[in-house]
Image 1: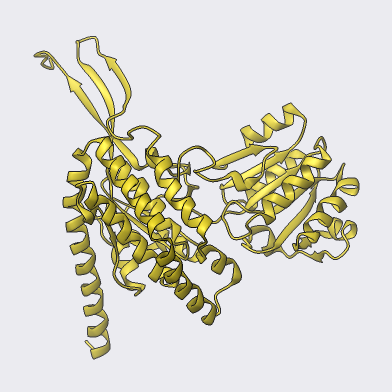
Image 2 (image 1 turned 45 degrees about the horizontal axis):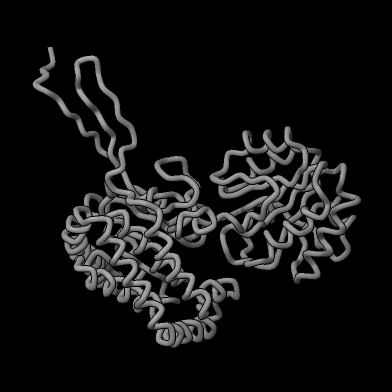
Length: 430
């Protein structure tokens, strides 16, 4: 064995040992958390929200260091937008924690109950998942959202944030831990992985039997790595290739307003629209107005041949555009032969995240809702509503695009499993 391979092997062992130590402390804290009262968990989040508000200046100072370093490293503008905190975004984090506390206890809910002919009383009761690993990139607010959601559902969180947000995320995690301490709960229920080394991600993904589930929150390369390497169950979260289909029966004013908001409100979030499909019956009359409004807002258009013929300043799309999450002020546009063609396009190029039809025809709206197999399907609303807070869930860890366990916004109630509680009176099985 060469010296280089020995060094690599030792490094892998060191990271595995580090993750195991974190899990050991997390597991002990989680057992306490799972038995705590809902009121005590609420107190922990309430205390954390107060600490976040009280530390706004310190959070902004640390975030400024992260933003400066990201700029020096040539990070794309969309990612810097995700990284950057403001007074309003800090308040939103604190308010999100408070919103979580008003949604009812996720633990101990009776999900179903029935009695067998032999008299056995059987109930399905919600329980925590256990130790949750959250791997994310540039958004420091994920630190607070993920920790808060895990805690209220009785789970411990091991957080591995991106190197771009390390100053901000580490400080926010410490505030969450302080909130736990103030409520009399173990602070190790929230821990940050104390290294930027990407090998630590590999150690988390290999921690089968230690970490109970991994939740990735980031770009395509991160999610692909997690899904390829993980030996731990994963909540799938693919990129947000979100579509707007402008039907022949669309209200023109709604179409324009929704298109601009869905694309341009915040271009760097997973719910931002990336492709507009428009029925050929209304494209000549309506597409120029939609495209003009987008261009006025600073959006570049990449269109198919028909779109380019209708939209001044549009550039020809290539095949890759239909499956690209731009996270930027760019949108692809295709003219299609009606709703069936639109649904086929979404099935071919979409990521099962969020897709919307703009129409006043109730029959076609229902067809779209039934036939588009995405985590979120909408009628006449901006795709930027694809958010746990907007769904009344207080906050979310992400939008799950898979079909196992959780789908759509992953809030506190999605971070639970269940057990069966069976009550008998001396029954024996013949």
